[in-house]
Image (cartoon, rainbow, N blue to C red; front, side):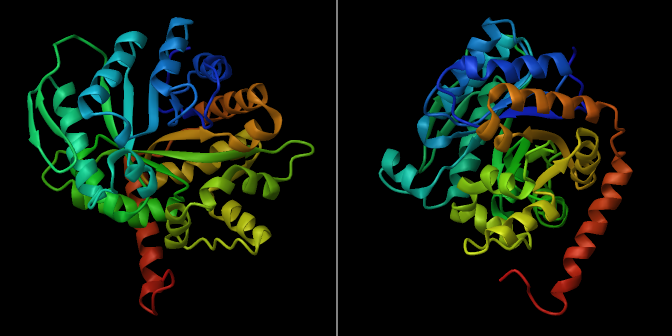
Length: 354
């Protein structure tokens, strides 16, 4: 089925040992007309090679990486890899990049980035210029590059930045085509991240579009949504930058109160549950908050029931979403204003997020 521009995308959220583990997701994306197949950074089967393998198996769908880590490859190599995926699939792709933890950066570069925002900005700008056919002349603290790519016709490649907090949202506004967010509820997107992106994008034709990964736990006999919400998010909740993002969004994250944390994740829409139709309706809140592309993240089902069960669930949700009309641009703008007003109201009586 032809990918639909208003359909959600499908995310394989783990590090696969072999591309065949991702094949059911690629097949589900192809059958359902999902917008794209996304992979994360993997230190097992490398994501670009996995996606190339799947294209060779006949799953030539639009793809994206959410996100690969800057210290692993020079921006020239990153541009070659990104363009290669568009050449092999014959379809548009998104090359998403992120920093990684300070410890990871130190292990590869000798020290953490003094300015992560500057590192990302320079990297994205170099990759974008190369993909546009330009020549880069960059001598910065985080990379050096003087050169250009050999010219080849290829499908569109968008350059994305991983975004959690306002500072990086401004950087994405300055230099990215796509801002890729994880575990960012609609109110926080509309009231905090989208305005920061717009601020960074002053002078550009438009801010980057927003692609957001959303945990989905479809209802089924024997599935406990609260337990599965914690199963899906456990590793991210333990990471300081994700915990900080959730607290900024007004979501209490308390390792001593897992039940309360699970309720907050479900109540806020960070984790969506219900029938495929109910999840499709709930995803409308993300679109009204300004999200252009939703990445369906079935981590909980994948971890507890396996690849085929998770692929079947996302396929059902894509089908349900294609039956739901997305909000218009005017409705999205009105909803963002509402969200922003709701976030600003408590500030008059004092900060709630620390």
